[in-house]
Image (cartoon, rainbow, N blue to C red; front, side, top):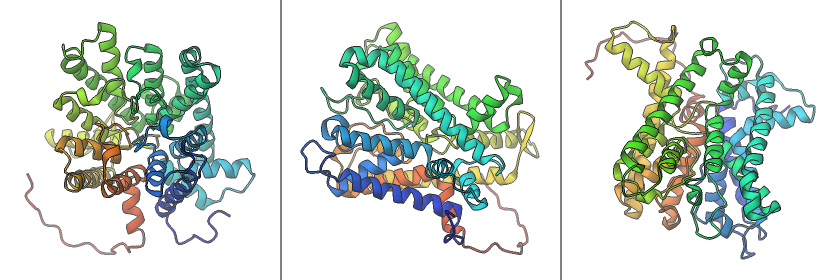
Length: 447
């Protein structure tokens, strides 16, 4: 029923068009006069940028969210974040199930592509689990955050703040409402608050490891050895990135005299900043005070991002894991790329290499364009480009000052970063006919 007139459109093209349609709808809503505090509504450029950032769960903003948008505007942004975090097809399937519509084969096929599911079987059940886990985790996070915000801000405002930040954190969006006293302050007022920082970090990690990982863990409990290879790679790589980031920021950044943090605050800031760049966009310290080396490490963490089928972006932790296993196979002269007593197919390795190259090319192109268009410093330009294409939302404070041309570059980076480089490639190449022949092989010296 949903795709009766779109039989010639590939799943990748449907996903791309779905996100584009939602961005345009969100842009129109944010242009309404009730969305901004001046009663005029946002201009097209500001509305388009904000809607794209919300749908792609990025968090880059051209206006401070609480100072510029009314409660109605904030509610629209939150709705866009929730839809973008769940994914276009997940929301469509949930609506179809609730309204009693028949779920055909083509819809299931598109849904499989949308959440990066390994197989078509059980896709509707998986979607039901996704909706349940999102509801439960976000409500739990909101309840915990309310313990801090309600006493500080009053019950109604504290509850809204708790709900907004719980959804934003789980969806890895990075939008915040903390700028009432100081614009764009994010969570810098809670640097040493373990309740806020740990709850937000926990929501980021839960949303970032992916729905398929959570489903596998739910069905098999805490038996790591029984998990699918993808689940084990996601959990191990995520742990190593967080642990490595924590040790770096603890030893080489926040323990230095420049920050003058207490011992508990140093541990908390190091842990939070190891988690947030993948790919949430909250910051509990002023990022402009980070050393150039720490800013570079933050860029690397942003580019890697989260897991497939998650609310986060980046070129994904599984891509990094597969490429690393391929590197190990070369060093050890193995015939196959393998890990955890499982062999990774050649097609998976090729896809990982293709995703990585396409992602890096887009990132470098975006960073160079930002440098050329607005004459930004090299670090600021590439930090901004990494934040956009990895759908993170962290910034060194240059986003509101960018020209319309640079904002357009960021919009494209956020869009491509959310739909996925592989989805873009498949959407463009889906109509191309596969060759029915193979050319003779010839070796080429590399390296």
